[in-house]
Length: 207
Image 1 (cartoon, rainbow, N blue to C red):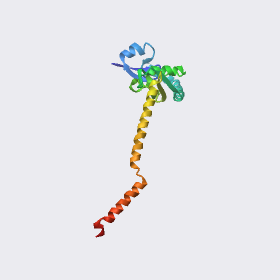
Image 2: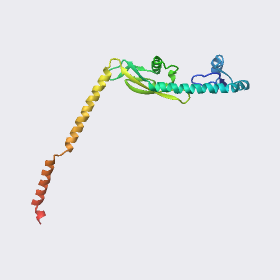
Image 3: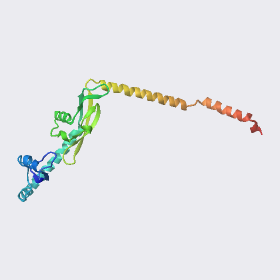
Image 4: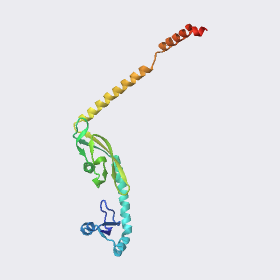
């Protein structure tokens, strides 16, 4: 069974003040109604909310403006998180949305719900640069750049050395291919002269 209610204030993952929702009876009876987070959807309550409509819309507009301001702050940030990691770059542990939220709070950016920080696979398990999406208000989202590094720097040094060796190997291959393709001019001329001489000596050519 379900109950039709009107939200008396914003409820995370459910809706905003003034929204009409259908929820489970137990959720309404045991949580939303006793805590005054919602009221029953009745003609009297509908009338009261209509009288509050202008004030509700004003608050929603303020939330939109606050979300835009927060997005600007987030997209101007670049967070570095140090983690213990092996030489291959795999973390001993993982970077979670809760850790990112804590780092943001250290920078004075508060009010971000960790559940709205979207991470692939729910966590980061290797060093590297990542872009995470943070849901703000309504359809507003922000992109946050995160640089996950090892505490001792060994993983980065190992990766840099591997990249250097790979680059050298690629250059060696390219050098070999180039030398095979290039034929010295004098060899080409000598080959052409030999071909011409063979044609002149060919008996069939004289006939």
